[in-house]
Length: 236
Ligand SMILES: C[S@@+](CC[C@H](N)C(=O)[O-])C[C@H]1O[C@@H](n2cnc3c(N)ncnc32)[C@H](O)[C@@H]1O
Image (cartoon, rainbow, N blue to C red; front, side):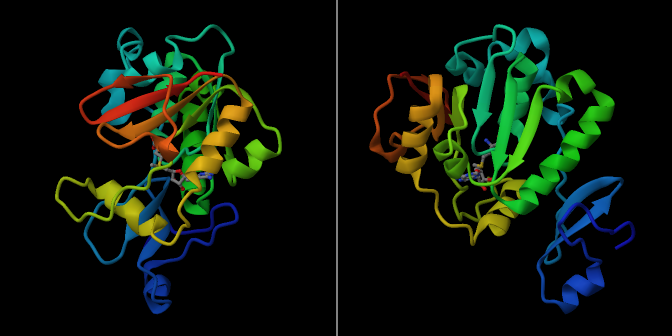
């Protein structure tokens, strides 16, 4: 594939080499953005962006305060309020929090997702330096970081892997995420929640599917519920 190269510590191969090696997923550059392709499908390559994109209308300054996630965090932040987003994933929730004005430290243990996030952050740094300055990324296991003493006013958790469903309703980028993370170990949800509660100075916020039980069976202090998802809030 044209434009393929090497990004950071991750090998980025061309399509022929990836096929010879029997790989299904290929990390390559498309239009300047590090992108993940599924060689077994005609899906568009997945690259990440922090420039609002499809979320733009929700993230306009006057609207972002109405996001349930922002309400669960305690509303619009006072200056310098920090969130440790311990399960950054595609960085979408991190973007909502940063647009609201929070300083967001993302943690992601998948090296491929971390590389995609780093690439998106670098592009954001050129386009919107002020927003980029509120977002940072650590590649690694959040449990280890929390156990080592990392703390924040708020710790945010969204550890649930997308289901293995092939339903059309599962969006293509989530299907790609399912493939990418299929071999990751299940998160130790109780350990992660315990560590988050031990380190968060003000609250822990956990994203759950609307009808799912509380994470690790631990009842929250309150919830901010929506149709599809709910945010469970744990206070100290
Ligand atoms: C459901 S996704 C998060 C989606 C994210 N909230 C967003 O808006 O894009 C869960 C992510 O958490 C990561 N993850 C799970 N356990 C983790 C841990 N202990 N430390 C760091 N990342 C973890 C997974 O690799 C996956 O990328």
